[in-house]
Image (cartoon, rainbow, N blue to C red; front, side, top):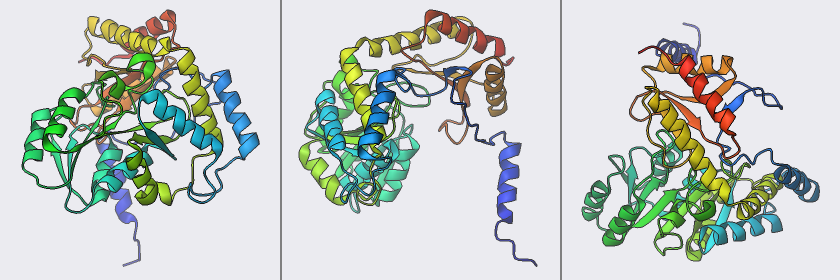
Length: 380
């Protein structure tokens, strides 16, 4: 037999094709050709002149790359400034900026747990949380979605260090976690609460300060949050926010911080500019929620099945993976970009279109988007 170590990949590819689960890269042009309801640019800031100018100026001043890990040469005054302002804006004592939101979740989960500890994780959590649980070497209990009592049950059965982790807003259906109830459960069980606020920052809370601020939990001694700079802030990167002693612990122990190249200065500069712009224009947060509600109400009034959005994600159910793929493709042909979620990205196996509301969408654009989705909808 000839040596063919990767023949198994061909069989995997055939299985994906048969199940309608093939994924492809689609480079987008520099100038938008489609009405965009697929990206995570919730506040419409990624092309804002102030944000792009700040990115360019940071690159000119500090260089194109960070040049090394944050503990060697990758920290600049710009990174420190962004961390101070993020922590102050969101209501936490300290912040630590990493190269991505994914890296931030891995950092927090692996550094704050370990062998002998327990992680209680919501079944709907993002893949980065799932991977962080796997890498942590802690025992992980996956509990039913948005079920504080299930979390409490797991905590009561454990003796020792424990942490409950949840998305603030779940990326598949756009529903929000019951954060006050989870915080109560964690306090009663002596556990820390870690919240991934990727989809809450810039959309929830007063002026977009996030889901923890909205729930009155920001700055709590037992509360840590992770977030991304790539959604509402229109840039790239991630951060962990919490008590100063927690952030200092991550600096000394979190492998995705210690051994990763620091965030590029351009991304740090852009995120800082977006944060300052949001401070000046806090109404952007409410506008994103208003657009999401309008999309939901008009689509469901026309007979589609969707989940009422708690933030800026509008999830519309499709009859199958193939139907979702064709639906998204037909929308694209008609000038509208929408997200398409299929297994394994959806934990319940139900495929969806995902529309992301943007604060800068006009009423005319919202109407156009709704009409396009309805026109392309598959027959059930």
